[in-house]
Length: 52
Image (tube, rainbow, N blue to C red):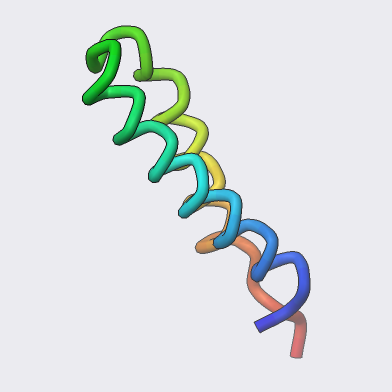
């Protein structure tokens, strides 16, 4: 796992935790964008393949 992949995964997990917390506190509609940021970082993690 490269450094870039590690950063993407850490950001995805962090935004997911923040998004779930905000969903409980203020509702899903207000925190939807945070959950989508998590999804974007997860997709970036999946798409970033190290060159062999």
